[in-house]
Image (cartoon, rainbow, N blue to C red):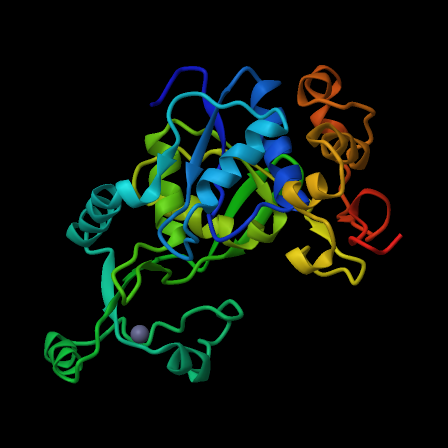
Length: 306
Ligand SMILES: [Zn+2]
């Protein structure tokens, strides 16, 4: 629930085990919140790609590395009425339209002149009611898109400074009825009083869309800090196959959660074995600006490969 202290959060998707890159981002989000006297919340993004039992294991892993949180864990699957209410509000304000495009049609459609790369070209924006009825009669189920009146929006990020990025007619509710990430994250952060969003910098490009949407809904735009990801030796986003990258992999090798915290601390330029120790010395101005390249050696070597 909203508090005057403000809050940070970590919002994992329970699609599998957290790897050390996820854990490092969670540690950073926790450090930013705790060293600014904010609450720290956990929200499980369980609208899609859910693996049974994964959420529980992720929460256990976060606790094992010394991340604590305030209040009950929020599950997005229990908040569907809130997302529907936001879509209703935007629709009542004339801010939405139905889109019947398939993924393929969107890829094939020429992007509007001077429009942002990869943006939805607005194909269904001007459909008449009769045209929409004809699409539905073909058995097509429409997604709900935002009728955006800008093509760019600027946000401020603690690490990236002022950042301008594309805004298009983003999907609010998918054709399968599932509310879209860009909507749920905005609705939930505001409802939970989250005023500080620390997450991986792969999400930076979609942040202007979210900030624009928050502003349309009359919600406060949070402070952002998009932190560098952990990459594998090839410079690609870390994945399970990149070695002993999860806490359970590490335990199987005889390592403790403190060993993993120590490796994360070292990647941030600190010597610490617990998140409590790290909190004492953490300086957000000193965050490395480059990705952590995780080599499959030392702590993260694959089993059987010395
Ligand atoms: Zn469309």
